[in-house]
Amino acid sequence: METMKAPLAQTREAPVHPLWLRITHWLNAFAALIMMFSGWRIYDASPVFRQIVIPPSITLGGWLGGALQWHFAAMWLLVFNGIVYLALNIASGRLISKFFPLSPRAVLRDLIAALRGKLSHADLRQYNAVQKLAYLVIVVDLIVLVLSGLAIWKSVQFPLLRELMGGYDNARIVHFCAMAVMAAFVVVHVAMVALVPRSLLTMLRGR
Image 1: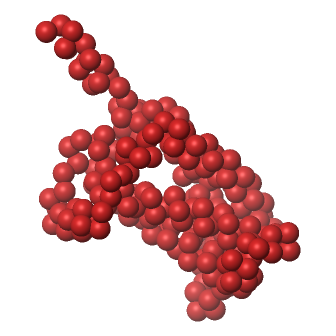
Image 2 (image 1 turned 90 degrees about the vertical axis):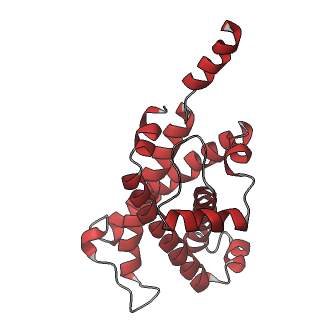
């Protein structure tokens, strides 16, 4: 009986989120928010869509030059920290174990349950299908943001990347749309954390 209790005790003591995950998560979040707010200031200097203007009060940088400095500084943090985040998720097996399997049926089932207020959050070790899809989408979205940003910033140096985006002007549209997806994710993510505050404590403490 004692030998059976020991593994169970160790399982209970194991952190929900390991330290490396918490560090890279918060660094990614910090870098992504800095890029979003400074990117809005850059966008206002030459809007992709003339009818859409970001209020200056919610942008970062003060002016175009300042916004560019913030944007590029956060870009390097996001790129290098994002590589570490993905590499550790893949190497540890967490990417497969946490986010797969995933099916449209499971997403629809959990989405309906969430809309009805019947989706359980009792076990924070397990992601529901909607969470799995959302986290996978934001990872892909951040990759698209970086690649489209490179196609805009270094258009001459990366002609193939620029053409894959459909040209310079289309790369700007892709970049803006990817930013909009990230902004929507942040809003929904913060709302979910407000509804389940234990998830924030878990990401801070690991347990």
